[in-house]
Image (cartoon, rainbow, N blue to C red):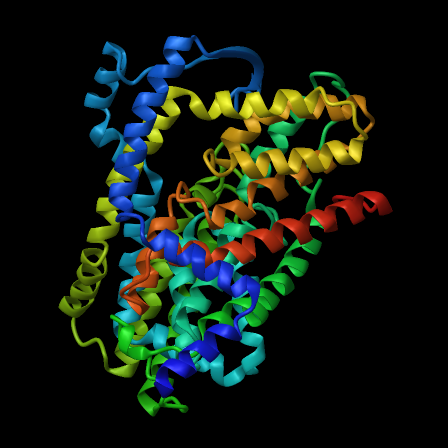
Length: 521
């Protein structure tokens, strides 16, 4: 009776937001396994594609070819997956869909290096060192900030930073699910901004310029067109993510019961590093220096092999940036081995290979899920439903006779909604840029503002849509700490981040626009 009374008291002290999130989690976790969910979604796409095909759904629009940068007039018609052509497509695409799903290769390659670093004890030691030298309140800010900046390495932040964030929180006695959420919010929810230029910026800028030239061939943006706004966004979103964690997420999760974990706790009972661990970190530091020197030699000199062989550029479309996941694997592999030698936790090449094999074998469930997701994404795109949806929402907004600022805000909202079902940033912008950029240019709106608006719309929803290729992986990370975690758990964790980041970021955009601040350098 006393225990029941305590439970009731605890429930009665929950805020409205916490009760809503509990409901979201409960409902979300009542749905079937993610594999079953995507099988159901595939069935829905099969039927819906045929219905739209029978109705003759079609749209004609202008699009920018991301490869040639030419403006083309395209007509998109709903394709049925239940016709002879559709069935042939399904039959022949099973393996190519999986092999073309970049998340699979990225995850396996990254985990080979991370697995060695983790098994050797480097990850554990680094986290404890970070905790020892940083104020406890700063941990969430550090993770959020690094998570946002991790987009310079494309998708690597998902497979490296997110699990490390959970381990870091666990190491200081905080709820690891909150750590996962902070890391995921930074990596996914602010993916399109950074404090430095990244490859995505080059592509988005070129597509924007192609759209500008449809109405004004003399105007172009450069790579720094959004740098000022992006830097401000990084700083503001870092604070927003930290405050959401401190005010909403951790109070709702409460104390962590380590008995629910299926992974070992990273030795938070040891406040000081041992002599072997300290020597291991010193060796890892030397290995890090060696790796840095190696890649400096491969990238910095004129004509270096990892520069673009035609243009000579390093940042943008270059071998270095296109293969950045290899740098990350080598970095973790070299430092992990060096740490293991110094700390005496790795004593043979067989131990290194065993650690790599263990890391890859642990991905079995995730790879199974990726098999199903890759089929769904391919079928969904083949049906042309995403394009039909995007343009059916874009046309009414484009033709709305409202002020430029309200039109920009409406554009952000449209992109946010479309991002639930159509996540690729470049593919969406290739469709939206020729639709909206000319309209805004004719309204005397700086094209840099339109690109900044697109960055906002394309990011926050990434943290809650199951169509994000890494969403299911985060569910798997969560299950390491709570065996009952599911889709609803992650959605409930990330929903406050998505809502508040979208709102605050949009308000920042409105203030920036009204103050007439420069969008770039």
